[in-house]
Length: 451
Ligand SMILES: [Zn+2]
Image (cartoon, rainbow, N blue to C red; front, side, top):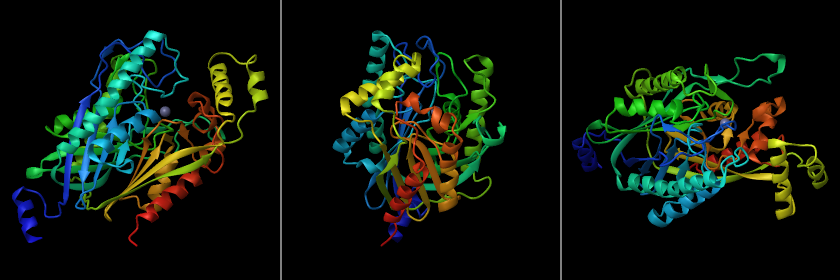
């Protein structure tokens, strides 16, 4: 033990370092004009690249030899096929199991459409669809490449964690009781995981925030405010990789913002929000405020499925009758459900919802939720498990839909019930949505407690 401590000291690492860490990033700019994701109202493909977009990976190997990888992306979301394809290839290549891969995305609304993500949102010509297919196939290879490079970069490192603060997010819901528009609940925490290598140099920083990446719209490729935050952090810390991890931003927007614009004022806002987030993160990295706590291993992980119920789906008779009543997007959704009913014999009454939990020794608990959870999930789990050392990451795995809390579901509105058709789900979630997910999180965390 003394010999290890001396060796670590020689490398300029604190004696508590027991990790190997590696980080990598791969540029995912499209090679041709392509339809952009996230907004339904666009009328043509992208026309230029305003800012590079990336996928990134942080590989962590603890002293048991287990390797875990956090991936982040300047993408609106992923589909199930992408997650499964990449996971299978990474398992075959490095033996890393599914539960040790976290697929987070920033929910960037200025990136290409990929795979089946929000498939009912867009009506693409065959040529436009072919460009999306080419981009998606290349993305599979790029995910495998970035993870492979991060794993091959593994080297001694020390980890610390602390929460910063940034006041960018505003609760955007319009349907709260009493007619009050703003403010509503938000989570302004900025969780910061620093990874330092030789000479205490910053090798990587994973930082989070709970807010839609919707400061920009229009037809230019960029990473929105998370893209600007990552770029700024990497410029402040040369040689490092900055990874943005989205939190529970389902009902939060950066405000003010200007819709349908990539004009100078919008870019100014997006880069300003990015700069605020970057500075908030840098303050934590520099130890201004509470001293970041060492993060110890081992990293124990668990992955499970919460069977989240839907409300009653429409009957075949209702769907058939709707064909002559609906037009546009509503008709598209109606016909999509009807074809699913024909194909599968019934519409699903529940969604198999992936939940991941990662426990770093006794230092840090990371909860990975799927889709677009509203802020109540972040606030609830931090209240339940400790606000200083719990990190709730939403926007992992497939972008299945908004995930309302019971409060938001009761209130209705876009994130509660009205957004469901855009995602092709058969009905709004049932009243048990929040408790079903919370029970699964609790069950998985309990399974990681020392016996
Ligand atoms: Zn969204």
